[in-house]
Amino acid sequence: MNKELISERLALAIDNMIAGQIIDRLDANSGRTLRDYNARTGKKLYSGNWCTGIFMACLIAMYKRTGNAEYLERAEHAAQYIMSLQYLDSRDMRHYGMFRETTPQSMECLPRDATTAAWCLVWLYEATGKAEYLDRAVLFADWHLKYAMSGNWPMWAMMMDKENTNFYNKGSFQSGTGLFYHDLFLFTNDPRYIDQGLKPIADLYIENFFYEDGGIIREIGVFNNKEVIRHRSDVVELDMHAFNDDFGNQMLMAASDIFEDEKYRDQARKFAYWLVNHQQEDGNFFNGVKYVTSAVPIALMYFDELGRYYNDPVLLNAAERTYNKLLDMQILESSDPLLKGAFEGMPYTAEDDPRTCTQMRTNAYSFIALCKLEGKIKNFWLGGEHNRKFVDPIFIYDKNNPYPFKY
Image 1 (cartoon, rainbow, N blue to C red):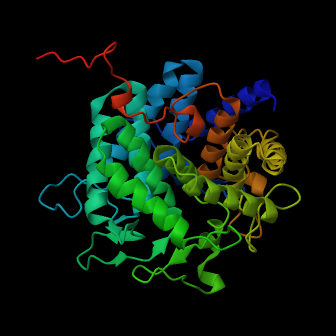
Image 2: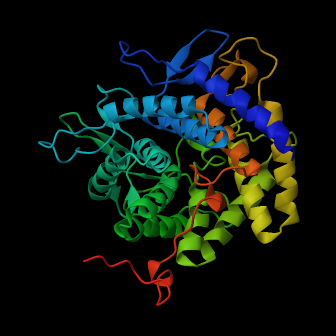
């Protein structure tokens, strides 16, 4: 894998993301960037909580790669938008600390989306040392543990209207929430985030969300943990998560490390093999309706990291093939600054070409996947093996290096 080429591609990708960011203190959208762009129709949708978060995480990673302060300044601008979505009215503790979905007026919170917003604030804290970012993430986590979990699993959606209608079924895409709690623990030293967050999510994921062949069960009932079957017309978006798990298996790798139990990583490997067996000849993934382009960077992360961990030639060969596909997906030929440097998106209609529509999900996941392959920086969102591991301080201090008691 050509690391010089990866560096060039990362620069193009971040320039594309920046081209869509609004920086205007008189605009209520300030800090947001493009979530979806369709060059054929000219339609633009701006980022809500989670897409603003992953954009911010890419900016932080680029700042670490280059030292260019502009990337960090833009990341903090994005963080200001995210923090404007946080509900901080202490008269209503049932919602205190959550992040609204899209704008400060939104009446809904999708806990998995909001988790990514809080998660990326953790990494902004790591990069800046500014306590407010971690404080906001802790406020969210404490709300999430108390109000957004049901049966050791995050709820699908929560509403703030008078009826207070929630969606309770358990979606597989919530699995990455455990990795947020893992990372938050590393920066707070609060074991609740492992005991009540990572551990139950990791255990329920491997016990209830996988078929025998390693494929993912996308939805189970909230109280019976049985698979929910829906009509095809209802599950196009949900079927995407058969291939793009939004980092549930990255979470399992972290669980194996911190619990020193290989059963979690073994399950992640089974899913990686399922991806190999369901990958199209050209390296893409197809859910029966449209290509799932966001699954390509996800698969690349898993094939590479697990392939090297197990020294597995099947996964390593798949990583090479998927790496080449990801590079091919990057749009280099366009003069449109909102397309050039982005990665092929998932068309929503038959009239659209993947190379004329993009989504932040695929763009950001691709950027982070290439950062992981490049291996140039440490301690960044989804860094996995490139991030620090938990070590109990009991192993750090001894008679030659005593704990620094002061009083």
